[in-house]
Structures are given as C-alpha cells and as structure tokens.
Image 1 (tube, rainbow, N blue to C red):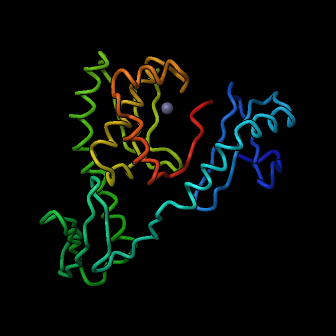
Image 2 (image 1 turned 60 degrees about the horizontal axis):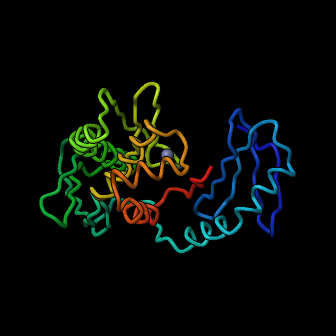
Length: 241
Ligand SMILES: [Zn+2]
C-alpha cells in the first residue's frame, strides 16, 4: 500500500492513502506520533484537510499520549528483565541446561526461561512468543463463551494473529475474531473489554452512538478498562469514524 499524498496541517505531517472505503480513518502511531489518514478514493485533498483540521485536538492529544506512554524496549531475554503476563509483572530468570527451550512461571513474580547454552536470542524470543500464544489460547475460550452468551451469539470463532496496530478485529460475516498475541500481557479486565468491543460489532459495524450504547449496556465500565489498554496501546486510532 502506498502513500498517495502528504498534507501539512498546523505543522503536523499527515500521510494520506486512498482506499476503497466509505469513511475516513485517522490514526496516530508510536513511537513518534506519525499521523495517517485512509480516505475514500473520491475524497478531495481539501476535504481530507478539513476532516483532519476538525480532529486536530484529538490528534494532538493522541500524540501527547504516545509521547508520555511508558515504552518497552526489545526484550533481551536475560536475567532480571521484566516481562508482563496477564497484567502482572514477572522477572526473568534464565536457566541454562541441555534440552528444548521452555518457559514456565513457578510463582507470581518469576518467569523462567530454560534453554541450552547456545540458544540464539531469536529462538528465545520465539519460545516466549509461542508460550504467550498458548496461554492466551487458554484464557480466551471461557471468556468468549461467557460473553457470547450474554450477547446471545453462537458460533463465534477466534484466532490469534500478530497485528501492528490493533488489539483485535472482527469479521462479522465470517464470525471470527482475531486477537493480537500482545493481549497475553494484559489483564483479564482489559481482555474482557476487547472481547465485548468485538462482540458489539455484531450489532453495530461502526463506532458511533449505537455502538457506544451497546457497550454501555453490556459493560458499563468499558471506558475505564479501555483507558488502561490505551496506555499500553499499539497505536491510537480514531474511533469516531
Ligand atoms: Zn471496533
């Protein structure tokens, strides 16, 4: 996908990509607060500029939030390093021993990486990633089942796939929710909010008033839960499209 245009709005560079979509979509990305717009193909650059100007307060707020957010540098998979699992912080202990690379949590504060002495950093990271996926795969089904019932929905499938900018996404016609493996680092409250958000899309496609009404009815404190997620956000997306 290529950038078609760039706009300068109040000193902010906005990358514009035209797509076969109905609504304009604005997003702000870490680590530098890069601003992108996906716009419907026929929309003029002037119209896009106006749309961005009307959301400038939101853009600046999102950029500020990203700048202030605590950021994790790439993990080196060494002793003493912090790793997050289900909202809890764990310290890593590396145990070298012959045999396959394994991850375990012996207590509420320690994550143990057991591996052979010559294991590469890439292999260590891959082992942790697949461990996160397995753990998340255990957590999702009962929660999803519980909430699908509350929404009176059946046959809602799911899968885990890494996405650059989203915690989760839903394909309503295929009845499948895709979860980001990064969610394994978040607590149950946040994961529930994500599930309720995606299930709400079965009733309302966009994030307008009706969507908010569904969320309010099903999970009244979703704003608090989402705010917590946003602090660890992959990107900040404009949900007012
Ligand atoms: Zn959504």
